[in-house]
Image 1 (cartoon, rainbow, N blue to C red):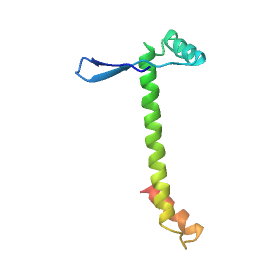
Image 2 (tube, rainbow, N blue to C red):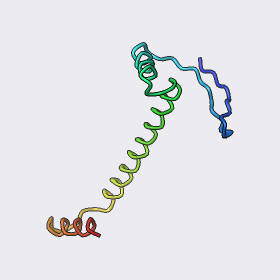
Image 3 (cartoon, helix red, strand yellow):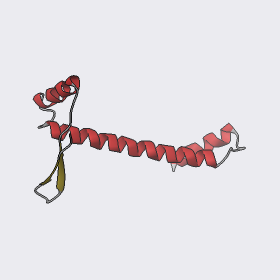
Image 4 (spheres, rainbow, N blue to C red):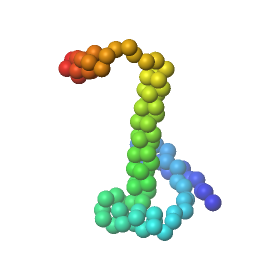
Length: 93
């Protein structure tokens, strides 16, 4: 069962409240992080994990888009020396 509530923070952001079920090992790990003062609550930790996962997904999406663009641009006839020189030139500004 999932329950939702609205909670307002000090800057008037709406935060949803949700009940979730965890496996015993995951719950123990969450408790350990809070007990070790890494986080002040399980909610803070779960929100941080979600932020990290969203950031990682954004990076994966960016890489995937770059790879797709590169694959669609076709092959080059440039020599490896020419490619290396172009890369060095771009790095050195």
